[in-house]
Length: 234
Image 1 (cartoon, rainbow, N blue to C red):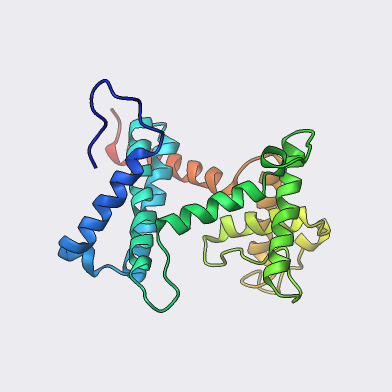
Image 2: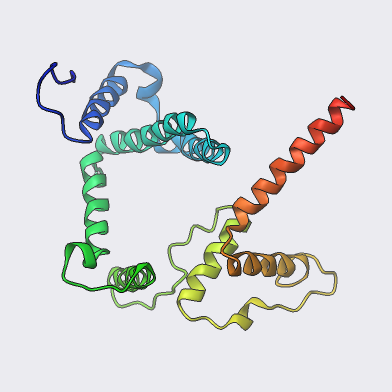
């Protein structure tokens, strides 16, 4: 897709995404490596690119963040292109992906796209959660649903604990559910060190902090100290 001619009307925002779709189509057909990729083979890259974008964000490197966001976007495009080739009725393309998230954002912002009134961002979040819960209930076909449904249990334990606490708290779960008795050896299970770590996550959230990012920052600072120690006195 060529860029608009000089002096022509300014293109609408997002026109470069159409160019990316064309590039992805070409790579899928003409590049041997791209042509052989599957959802499973691409999965590690989706995670890695997300972490690289987070690194750039944490470092405050805006140019690097722009580049890494492009890599994350590529993963979305790539997965949609792979799905587009399926003929078993489960396929979809990038337009389906965009249509789905557009519909979701419109549905969950009735104060913007509908006639709902809100008093501020806190009520926006309450409405979002209520609409999301209604969607889960409708999707369950009448089955009992949990506020914890849909949480990815395979994520790192610290971020898992934080997300579980957020969801449970918004659902009105009593705070005492966080407490657990330590086992006799203080090891794995509901108590012991794990319970202490969960309590630290509660403390972090009470202070408006993300425990995953806080631990990450502390770990990176520790890495800097170790490297300085390795280098010796200057």
